Figure 1 (cartoon, rainbow, N blue to C red):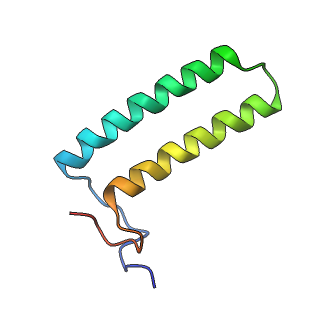
Figure 2: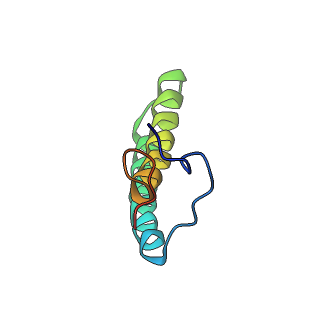
Figure 3: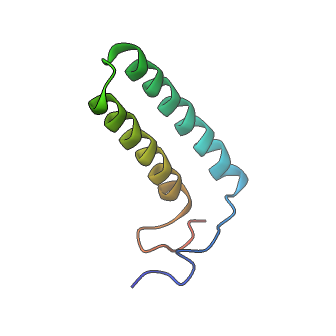
Length: 72
């Protein structure tokens, strides 16, 4: 069963914001590499969208436990 707050806004702690910034910067570096080194087309678009999705899930991982409980 998911935590009751799973689909509610969860304000990250200051520590979590710092972790998010580090992860975000590394995802941005990866995207930059992909934009430079992959050929344009639907496959490149797909890869970039999936990396963006992974970046969003990384933020969830930083702020919540697997069952949706806020991570403190």
